[in-house]
Length: 274
Ligand SMILES: C[S@@+](CC[C@H](N)C(=O)[O-])C[C@H]1O[C@@H](n2cnc3c(N)ncnc32)[C@H](O)[C@@H]1O
Image (tube, rainbow, N blue to C red; front, side, top):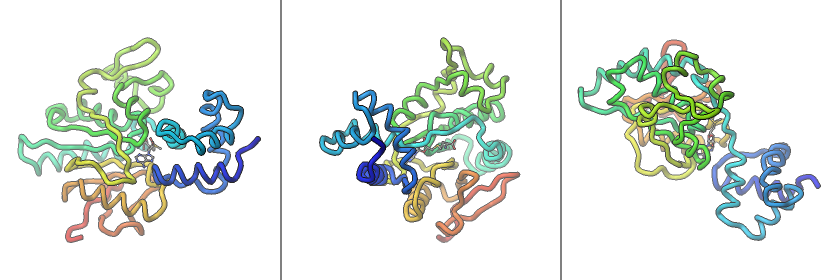
């Protein structure tokens, strides 16, 4: 049996309520493909049977499993390149000059997936600004518990390290762990990972000097994007920098940001007086 309209609608509403992710009609194939392995593990023949069983006997574990399965965790090292070049060439030098010598800087990788973005930043700090690295802490968050645990573990498969990680960096910042690669303890100490749903009120955090909020706004509707940008702004320093994904912008969404060009990248800064 293929996914029924009732089952799809139920999943769509659940995922929207829990994560704000929008699953448009037409995404039935995605729901089917992502939930089939869970249905099989539960001993059920198809996704509709699985959805029906969760619908009639909901539990926090099963609803979480559905939401997590419908997050898209695509990521890679140095994804899109330029936002990381901008960090070491412009953003951090200007922030370090503006802060006192003992003041700490805080960077947030929001929607961090399995941690490549946060560890890319940590490696860059170690390599390009070693004297400042001890003053910088990196917070990595994601709605997915599995992704947060993976970020905490700092372990990556050969396939994952092949996606954008330069070989000299692999040698410098990772140790072999069986068939996988593990970030060095030094790098792991720089990154603190925790669960955080961007679509709900944020826990006490920040104030952040730099926020990477990349490739996640695309999954939300306009009111959710607006609410998230407002929340992010509230936990940022007034002279902070926000990086979005290549297909994302604050323009036409929230006019309390100023777009600035940094090298070959764009960043957004809180507008003064807004
Ligand atoms: C495509 S990945 C982007 C990873 C990384 N930022 C990058 O650009 O490579 C999107 C991530 O957003 C997370 N996500 C989706 N909805 C979320 C929400 N409401 N709150 C926090 N994270 C969410 C997913 O779990 C997923 O790991």
